[in-house]
Amino acid sequence: MTANRPRTTDGRAAARSRAVRATGSPRSDERTTGFRSSAAAAPSGRPKRSILSQLPSLLPRTRGARAAVVGSVLTLTLAGGLAAQASIAAQDTTPVAPTVQSAPEVKLSAPQFRKVSVGQKFDFSVLATLSSESVSAGAEASKSAREAASQAAALKDAVDALKEEAAPPKTVDDPAAAQAFAATQLGKYGWGAGEMPCLVTLWTRESGWKTTAQNADSGAYGIVQALPGTKMASVAPDWQTNYKTQITWGLKYVSERYGSPCGALGFHYANNWY
Image (tube, rainbow, N blue to C red; front, side):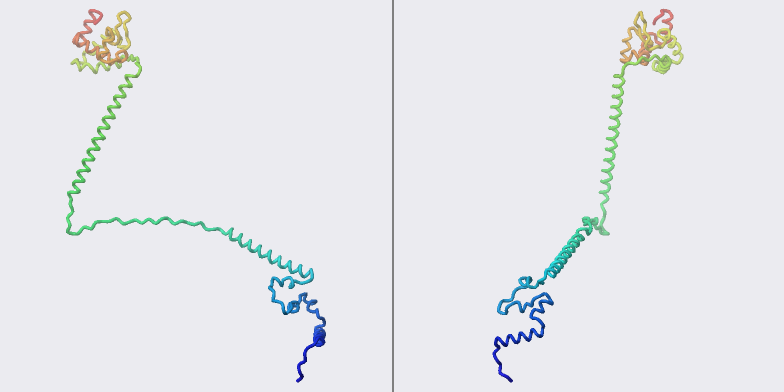
């Protein structure tokens, strides 16, 4: 064994020379890879730096290599951003199913029935009371309905009467209708059908059975030629236009003055008036 000799400057130079011969060049690693060895770049006595602080030293020295690295980084960043935007758009366009609210639950309680034992007796008087009350209520309702119908009928008659009174007077000259009405009134005075020809002759000579007949000299008016005509107002106010009013007054006058139509006609033949 040989004793350890202290390494001198010449010894270090010799070691370096041997390393150069082995690798070919002290900067061969830099030329071939483009990167410096971090172990060679950093002095052994300095503290270790972070990755970010070492980033400039890690980039290649040539412009083309650096541009290629930067382009790759930008491409990866842009691709990641586009992928994130596509994912967000896909989430926004995903159809959302509408939320259906359930109808409120309704609980129906079953009807409650009272239990009746077999030996318990039912009070039928309750049914009898209810039946009598129902009959009474129905009778009262029927009575009220009849009273309402009677009142409605009375009101209708009153309205019709007012309409007839308010209607303007109409002239009615209908000899056939007047004679037919007169024939129905003979029995009220105890006269038979044999009196009707005398009555027809009497009032034909006086007025021709015209309701509006009027004597220009005396002023006598109507079928019966009442003088003055206002006497017939004792029967009804429509004495000027209603042959029934005139005949009713004329038959009473014949009965009281001559006893019958034939008696009045005999007086008329003798005096030309009656």
